[in-house]
Amino acid sequence: MNPLLEANLTLILFLPWFLILATLFWFWPREPRGVARRLYDVVALLLSLAAFVASLYWVQDIADPAHGRMWKHILATALGYGVFLGALLVAVLVRALLFGRRRTPVA
Image (cartoon, rainbow, N blue to C red; front, side, top):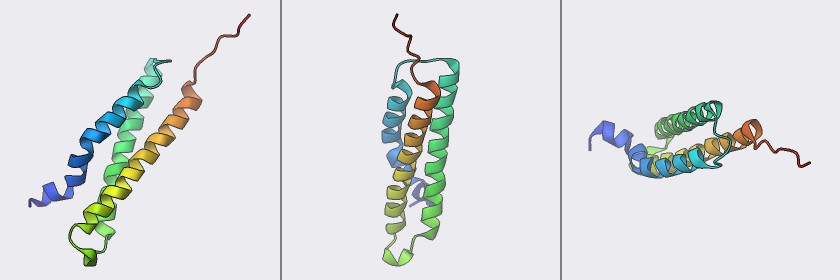
């Protein structure tokens, strides 16, 4: 297998699922949708993806090859997915604090 393809196989396989999660993150909640919120969402998604990729390469470097050639990919996939979801969870919580719905007082 091509070494470049092998090193990025996890990212290639998870990309469709990450696109689904990114779409849900982008469109939920629908309001408020200003420029600041869109910019925040883009930065949060890029940071989540960067954290995933960084964790992939780190885990593949430290995984014990004594457990088999595929072990480093399996471990990198599991931990990388957790890192991506954790980063998105933090982004959702921070977004709720920063851009929570502005409720108008009832008279």
